[in-house]
Image (cartoon, rainbow, N blue to C red; front, side):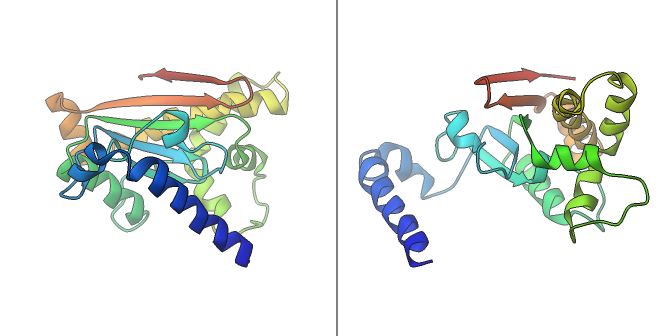
Length: 202
C-alpha cells in the first residue's frame, strides 16, 4: 500500500514540475473560477480517461464518470448526484456542449446485456445502475438478434449513449437551454482497441 500511495505522490511531483510550474498562463486564471465549454459523461473504466483521450486541458470540461457513462432520467428523489452535476453545469457554469461517451469492451454494458429477468443481483449497486440502459438493451436484442454476444455488446455501447442523450432531455433546465439554442447534446464512442473516436447527434 505504501508503494501505491507513493506512486500518487511522485505522479503529482512530476505534474507539478512538468506541467503546473511551466504553464502559469493556464493555471493562474483557474484560481479565480472555472468556465468550461463542455460537460463530459464518461465511464469510470481506468482505460478511458477523457482528459487524456480527448486532450482536454484543466478548466475545459466539467466531468462526471460512472459505470458505463449512464445518465439517468430526471428524478428529484433518485440519482441526485448526477442531477445536481447536470444542473450546476447547465445553470451555473453555462456549458455549451454535453457529451456522453461510451467505449469499447465496457464491463457495465456487458453486465447490462447479461442480466437475466428475475435473477438475483450479484452486486449492491451495479445491476440497478446499468438498468438505466434497459431500453437500449431491448432495442439491440430486437434489432441485432442474429449477432454474436460480443457484437451485440458493441452495438449496445452506442445505443446506451443514445438512451442517456434522451434522458438528458427529461431535465427541464436542459430542455430550456436546448430550446434557447445555448446547449448542444453530443454522443461519442471511444474504441481503444482500434484507436477510433466517433461523435453524433440525435
